[in-house]
Length: 103
Image (cartoon, rainbow, N blue to C red; front, side, top):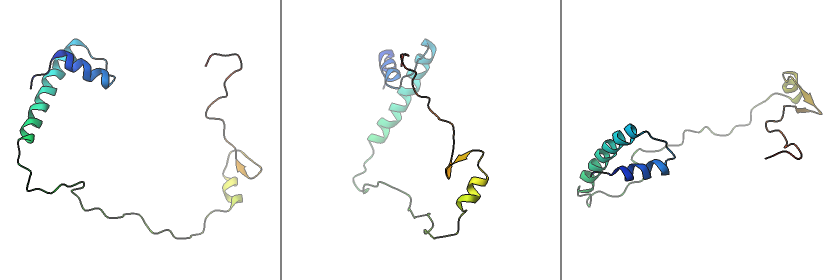
């Protein structure tokens, strides 16, 4: 399948990619080749193959929840650079907007 330059530009817009003319030409060939491979796969007879959502056997790798001792509040706060009223104190990650300023 030969894609046009317009096809490549459309895909680039959808992917929000800015491409040079050289990149568009390169991708035109690469994407056309990929679509040719997919066309070959579409011709395969898969009627005897049952649909599969997952080809690997999955198993739960999470551990069981167990109650275990943890640090006390005093131990945690002893390692904190700043704390107030029993809580860790951190700087704001997002500053509040300045009144009258542009957002």
